[in-house]
Structure formats: structure tokens, C-alpha cells
Amino acid sequence: MSDVFGADDPSAEPDALFEAPREEDPEPEPEIRRAPAAPTGPSAPLAARMRPASLDEVVGQQHLLEPGAPLRRLVEGSGAASVVLYGPPGTGKTTLASLISGATGRRFEALSALSAGVKDVRAVIDVARRRLAHGEQTVLFIDEVHRFSKTQQDALLAAVENRIVLLVAATTENPSFSVVAPLLSRSLVLQLQPLGTEDIRQLLERARVDERGLGGMVDITDDALDHLVRLAGGDARRALTALEASAETASDRAGDGDAVIDLSTVESSIDRAAVRYDRDGDQHYDVASAFIKSLRGSDVDAALHYLARMIVAGEDPRFIARRLMIQASEEVGMADPTALQTAVAASHVVQQVGMPEAQLALAQATIHIATAPKSGAVTAALGAAIADVKSGKAGMVPAHLRDGHYQGAQKLGNAVGYRYPHDHPDGVLAQQYAPDELVGVDYFRPTNHGAERELASRVPKLRRIVRGER
Image: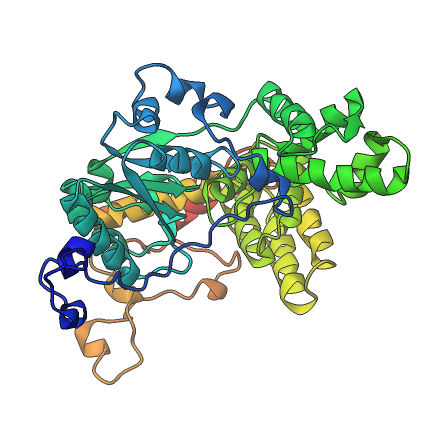
């Protein structure tokens, strides 16, 4: 900047150094709430220290990193398309964004959707526009982009389309539902997969011997390594965090001796297996869906497994209780009417007692619904009735069924001729209840499952009496 102010020009006046900035002077960058930088140095978490510094260190995701693949081109600096990286936690989304930023001539800006707003997005774009004027491209990494509102996502559109920024957005949720369509159409959507067991094993062994990691200061037994791989569930960050905790325990136990991570060390270091379950993402819907389908399929053990996953992951018990009440009517219905009572009771326990005690009531309702006889007759009956109403089959209410509790109703013919069923010895008599267009239409078709077996013979008899067919 010395050529701007004339400091290297011996003929320049001394006061020239204090002149107001000229038009070509760069403006100060606006304040941006950037995402916190990852910690570095020996005191940083093992997962941060072992973050791949090059493409060669990346494990997994070979379907996206093969020669000529769009993601590899971006990392190598030859690609120019914005991307949405979609996948579960610990699969390398942040790592790949960092590697993309390391390509020649690119600056890296990171925002977290948890803290950044529209103002921060526009500030980054303004800075990127100035850099681009000097031939410097900016990579904008937005973590958890699914948490951005529609307005915040819309603020990115023009900058992405005009390539003012190269957007790398990371999300654990299906972008088809969490990212606005215009932004999706301007980006490549790349789905990352959970790391395989051999990928996790390679990652753990590298961290154990690498100088950035544990530097070979601890050994690990095969069964302990296998257990760490299982605990990881395809999540690199979780695997490295578990290894670090186990290494600290092993070092404390060893004192001045050789530190060895064995199975008991791992088990005492990890108080519970981490559960792959994201309350706000795809895993939430996947586990809930599996829970529902296991109930419907009468697999009580699988249903209890998915219930346990939701409980351990901290799912809102009210959500679980709502699903159970719905399932009691939708999947069991009149085949066991007490299933709904059990589900409602479990919901009351959740509200009045709370967790963890309420988990037993949720388990009881889960077992009841899973083992109950199943019938979709209630669901089918209501669906058919709604379909008819929507198609226009909603004729006039028969006159004798209309409200007669007002002056002049009888002159209109309302409630005239209505027959009171309790006046009949059987409590049921012949009378038209449906509109003219729907007389004779059968909606409820009971099955032979559970308590509906009795209804299967009773309902046809009731229909014949009501319709005057006997």
C-alpha cells in the first residue's frame, strides 16, 4: 500500500501520509460472526489434531473422490461448482470443506447456521466480491445449513449463481426438505456415507501412532480396537473421541509403566455406547419410521430396540407417546380397543411422572401394540369416507335427523319422523341415517383378527336391521 500513499516517493509532502483514503483504498472488512475456528496444537481434541491435511489422508467416501469426480476436482482446485455435502455426523463434511478451501488462490470463510444471520451472510459476500476483483476466490463454508431460514438461504442465491462465492454447505438432513429449491438447483448435492469398519480401524490406528495424535505412546488390544470400531457407528469424530478417552484412562492406570488400551479400559472410559440418532435430522425420521413399522409388523423386539434408541438419544418422550397413541388406532384399531387405552395411559404417565420412570410406561404400550392383533379397518374406513366427502358425495342430511331444537323447525320438516332406538326392545331399528347418495355404502370392513372377529359377524347384522333388509 506504500504506492498508494506515496511513502516511497521522496518528493511527496509529509502531510500526504495523512490524507483521507482515496477511492482505490480498500474499505475495512465488516464485522462477521464467523464460526469458531477449530482448536489446534497439542491441547486440542484428538479429532481436531487428526483432521486430514490432504486428500491422501481422507478415509472413506471413495464414491465421491475417485479420479474425475466433482468433489475431487473441487479439492484439487479445478472445480467451480458449489456443493451441498449431505451425510451423518463424523463423515468428513467439515474436513472436505477445509480441503476445498486449501486449493490454490482460495480464501476460506466459515459460518455456523446456529449463530450467523442474514447480515453475516451479506457481509461475507461483500468481502468475497472485493477479493474476486483482485482474482481471489472465496470458499464460504456453512455448517448445519438446514438451520438457516428460507430468507437466510435466499440471501446466498445471487452470490452462488454468479460465483462470487464457492459455497460448501454441510447438512445432516435431507437437503430436499431442508434447503430451498433455488439453492439446490445451483449446487451439486453430494451424499456422504457412514465410514466403513475398515475405514474407522485405519483411522484409529493412524491416530494411535501419528505424531499429531498419540504418537505411539499407547498400545491397544484387538478386542479393544474392535469395540471402538463398533462404538463409532461409522462416525470418525466419535471414534477418535472414544480413543482419546481410553488412552487417558490407560495412561492413568499404567503410571510409569507401558500404557495399554484393553477392552475393560474402553468400557470404563465410555459410560454408554453413543447412539446414531440426530433428533433434528434424517436419523430422527429413520428411527421413528423403523419404530412404527416394527409395531405394525408385530416385531416386539425390534420395536423395543428402536424405542431404546430414542430414549438413550434423549428424544422427547411426548413425541414417542404421540406416535404410540396414533399407532394404537391406526394399526390395531378395533382388533384390540384396549391398546388405545394403554397408549393414552402411557401419555399421561409421561406428563404426570416424567422421565426416566415414564420409559417403563412407554415400553408397556410398545409391547401391547406390537403384540396386539392388527387391523387397518379403522384407517381404511375413515379414509374411504373422507375420499367420498372430498369427491362431492355429501348430500343433504335426512330431514328426520336434523336439529329440531328451535322454533319453527317442525314447520320445515326437521326432526319429524325420527325414531328413538332405545324405544325398541333390541335398541336398534330400521331407519335411514346416511344421505340419499350414500345409502348402502359400507365403509367399515372388520377383519377376523382379535376382537374384530366378533364385529365381523355383528356389523352385517346391524346393517341389515338398520337398512330394513331382515
